[in-house]
Length: 258
Length: 78
Image 1 (cartoon, rainbow over the protein chains, first blue to last red):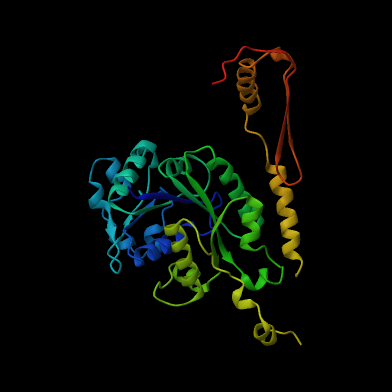
Image 2 (cartoon, rainbow over the protein chains, first blue to last red; image 1 turned 135 degrees about the vertical axis):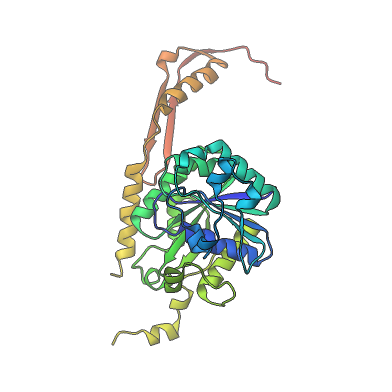
């Protein structure tokens, strides 16, 4: 049975969808069969993040209505043939009940090694539907007080569900600021929230513009996501150090203020 | 700007501490469960049971239980 991992945050706009897309790409690039599920009904964007928005024929709402089978709704990535997307319904989320959603995720887990669930923002019914279907959770935050505060509340809520493991991913980390003490670092945030850190993902203009990283490129973002994927596969390991490029004699020499 | 990170950590700690509230009904449930457990080992008056839940500056809960009991019950210890 594949692993069912929900990516959640509480606060919107911290990068859950971007992380689901990029983590999914990295896991698939390493050879795993991966299904990405957009659980955000109404404000869905995982299809756009993956560049698959023009390929949607059926979605999870159609499966709930009995209009199609699960296989018919899955969209295969055109480059990584072991990566699939199950798009969300655009409207009327009530018909995708918690039970139906969980049974769809369970069916996916029979054919995929990883099922990543993109949870909607907030802590209402959409959150509940997504979390109930998962066995593991990754809580996403950014180094901003309001985001960390909401992540803390989500972590408390997750403890009331049947979730086997919870970890923290800190997105949009500015290594240049945290090395100077101008911004909280990822490890510091994980320590405050008393949760293991599974990923520190650097701020990247390319991601902001294009949404997904080129997983073949050897840049800081890909290194960070590669370590993230390794952490998920191995159940632990190294986390990318966002400050590594901003330390050392030559960096300080280059950036000294006269 | 250089101390902004430290200041943010301080503010965050304060915010997280202020946000820590016990779920509604938890004290009542805890009392009911503790009464059952203690009563299976000791003869005690549940009206005298006191439960104190405090939060320290680091966000840890300290649970203190005071339950005066008259005698130990005959319990089979395997």
